[in-house]
Length: 194
Image (cartoon, rainbow, N blue to C red; front, top):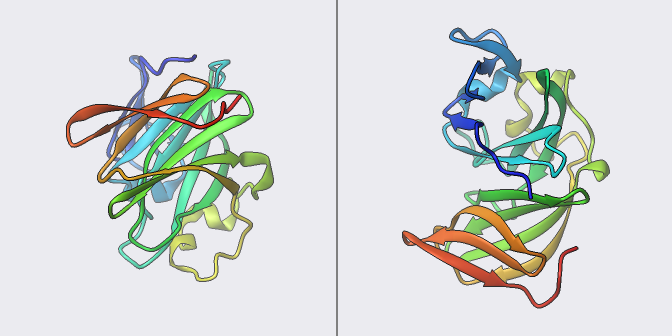
């Protein structure tokens, strides 16, 4: 399983221990993120198992509007730069991405929370429309309804009664980890994911 250090995510910026990466046009670092990410307040990172791609997901829509659109940005790790960008649709307005994990090449996992429930999805990036370097890369996507591009496909894997879960890690093909109410929680799945 790939580990994240030295990658650190702050509001609107990404660091790898040597360099600080920011949205294009923003001061204080090398501009590699889509410009709209200057509005990111919280998010998540996941490395693919090879360590060649880093996924950045904002936890909530990048606007102050009722929206379900969250962006999944895929960066090359060496040299660091924008590779692709996809749209992930939350189940409902007000839900959030609570964590992402990439334990196996074809299994990107997204933990989505709303109220007292957490839902785990397997996500297929290849089934979405790459919007990097497009008009939608510049913003406005979150405010459009219906979304004018094809979002990634997601398949429900499990639903658990967890309020305010945060973070996601894969301990084994049938066990995941998250944090809820300040405690580490192990989620045992009914089947293996890979």
